[in-house]
Length: 525
RNA sequence: GGCCGGAUACCCAAGUGGCCUAAGGGGACGGAUUGCAAAUCCGUUAUUCGCGGGUUCAAAUCCCGCUCCGGCCUCCA
Image (cartoon, rainbow, N blue to C red; front, side, top):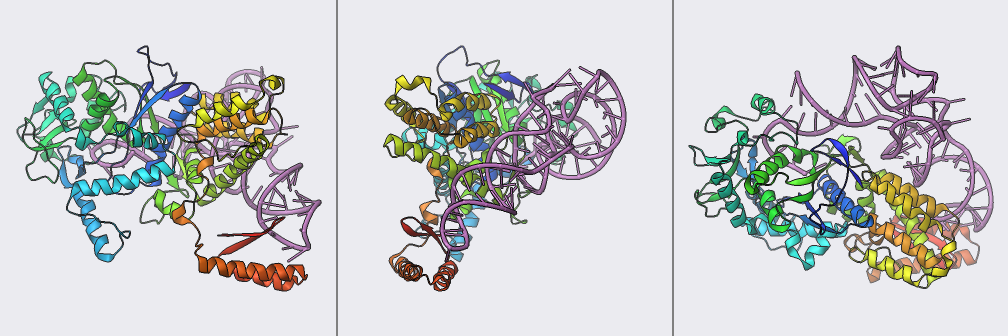
């Protein structure tokens, strides 16, 4: 596999580490003080796609994604943690929602308890993530260590700060805050291309002189801030307080994967300062020359050609879209199909395109499954490869001479994924197979399709969630059935005017009728 | 101001020197099917790759300039 590596700014062949074992992959996950939006999910889903692509190509992967449950400051720009904790802000928002009755029924949450707020939103995040097929979120149900939380790792963070202080890479400033000394690490800036000189200029305009005075260098960043009044705080050798926001990932990556990892992913905005600081902390703290062997960053998502923002009305969380009846599979494909190093343009039209696309693949699979005599709903998130192997085993090995279109597509599909995760090209390979004259052994064909779907992760989630399901309570369904019966009678009597009138009436109820060989079926728009 | 990406048909999106008179999907249009629809199937849909120069036997692909869009420069996926 070839991957673009942010640190070397070049395409590099992905070589497994000589240490052996699975590929060690750490992804920066969400901060749970609000619902994750589709832009957040682009980064998480691209990480998931990379992981699935590696697995398709025969690697074993241990994927860890953190869930940040400490709030961090609204004015982290001060680098010493000014402003208000985001958990406190979220608490106020929840308190208001509670007052106005906007919270979902049955939600019991204490807005003044930051842990409760974090639990509330992390629960919702995990629901969304599992719906969208984030494999790590499924695995974490059996092994929670795969999705670590900083509040459970404070001792490790404190230990890391101690090591940095001991090794002379960190110091306690006059204000009692522990800072990382960026000039003690000569590779600081390598990832982002920033130089200490350029950072000193502070052209971002967010560095205030008052906060800089205590630091040895303006780019020095906070590791621990003593603050006995903070909403979330822990004991430490530097006083009761809270950790710096870059620290958690260095500590948790080391704790869950090791001091040197293979892959690290995040959104492009994480490159600086977050990942730059992680490298400094990890390399200096653990004495490793390399923190992550490859760096994978996803560009941002725009919506309908514009930057996503609440004021423009184009700000979507995953659950907003699920509630509108958009299937998780269609949302996943729309978010993931644009190459990860390009800005993706999310559109409602695109979601629809993706739904139709997935439906075609699904039909092709169902047709094959019918011939094999099995039921099939796409690859399972955890057992996709096993399912495919079992199906292939049912196949007729003696028919090896006639390879069908899906089996033939595997090579091109894999090559496309191996080419820096070229998903569009992989989709084209799959489409060419889906459009081809069916051939080969159906069980092996279905196995091939299942393998490709295990890499894309879309077919099994291509129907809307139950929460968005059409109203099918007895009264409504009985009314629809009654009208359909009338319509069937009218059609039998060739009274098509009456038949169309009833169809219009159903349409006004939000019901679309389809006449099939087995009679009419209906669905909600 | 500095640094970094991008611009391919109505939309999304591959293609990074000859196999490109540009993949794939959606849409639109035409046909089959249908009482009419829906769904499905078949066909058509960029001699051209933001604009202007240049290099080359050969450029969407390389170089220079310009325009526009996006990102980062201590909130952010």
